Image 1 (cartoon, rainbow, N blue to C red):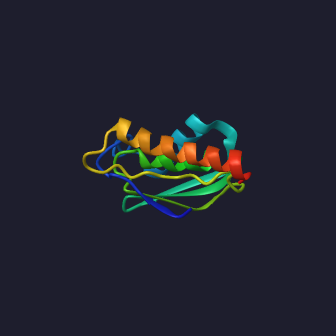
Image 2 (image 1 turned 90 degrees about the horizontal axis):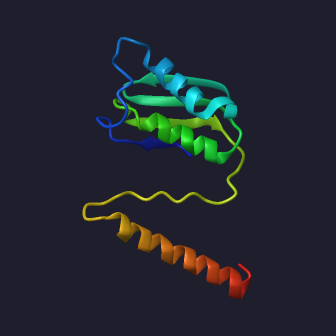
Length: 125
């Protein structure tokens, strides 16, 4: 997937308590995701968390990236060395913009789901 940007000054306040940042991120991932990532290694430098290991699914990889990115002082997450089986469906990310609301975003995605349903129903796509 690559490198993901996050808001550096938001999220769980786990870093800066006099402990090793990479170790704290790794402990969080192991606690929340259990044994779904084998050979997990995390490094942390200049606000970038780099994840390595083997995930049991693509969904686990996405969760690991989001968990690591939602920690205060983590501005980027690099998952290039975090391997996972190919995704069954392509994940679509949405960047929230000024003026967005949950209902506005939901309407957008509802139309996407309806279009996909009609393609499958009428065209076998």
